[in-house]
Length: 420
Image (cartoon, rainbow, N blue to C red; front, side, top):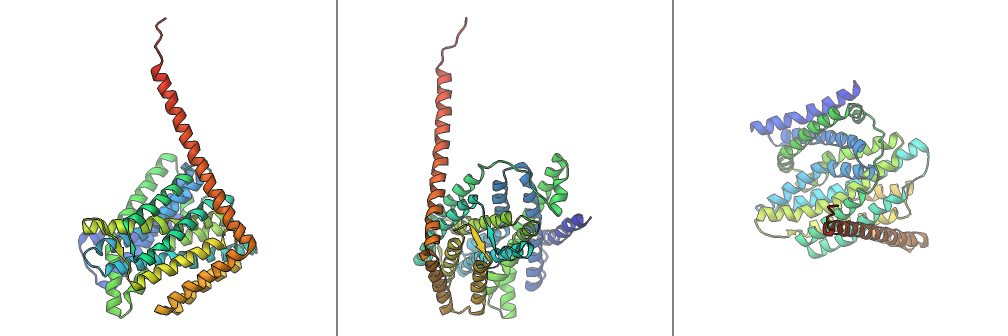
């Protein structure tokens, strides 16, 4: 009954926004920001439960990647709206960068440390050991991070950047499909859906998925506009509202679900989901921005980054690099979690122009310190080398298999039919 209440509550929070949006009713900036923000929150929970159940029908690694992708769908909807609108209203380019950088830093600065703390509270272990398979995520995230250093230097996010980052995401997504299907350990509303018969389960989850997707698409624009209007109405910097309040609504479900995984003994799966979410946001999300901007322009174009936005991107890249190097030994300690959280929290206390550059420098100095440590330096090289070589071998194996199949097919076609 509790699980039914949770599902009903999520639907009750999400559905009214869809009705109000279709009816054309306007409630004012602040009420609309609250209404549509709650709707996105409810819809994101529905999406996450549906995709968690999907682990029953696909490889776990692939399901986790899908879960991470769908969980950040609200973030995509909001950011794509900002980038698309920036073609006609250039000031919206700043909001696109704000939302993207805020979501990334919030996930790493709060979501990752939360998993380490919950794992410690449950097991009293001072470090969470990741699986060797997570080298894939770390390598992809590291490559994307290194490339992202170009963005603040150029002052734009171009279609070329989109091609590189989306291509990297495609390679990662392809690699996750190669695992075997496993029976998931579901809990809460997802467990309720998972106990249904196959046909009913798929029908119900498909219906909830469509409802949640419709709500997110309908609520993204009024929520984004409501945030900006609320900031102007209340005298609050709308850049900061877009950077932190919007990601709170969109990031909350995936962090909550990861916390639930951790509390029921699946901290490694939880960390894997958040790593996958970071890859999605750091590759596919950034890559969609210049595409949406170009569609709005009606021609190819690069999303511009102002001085403040370039600094925000640099700070986000520096945080990402520090986080990747921190995990290269496949151990996430309480000390590392504390460093991520304290550095993130300190940024909120000192949001000035100069301090963004200072914190970027702190992250980079800390990263260099980790790299100079012999064990971690060796881990960085072995992680990247092993994973890249492994991916190359898998790709070559797939090419050889495809070539063998084509040769066999051609041989069958050239055989002379026998009429004996």
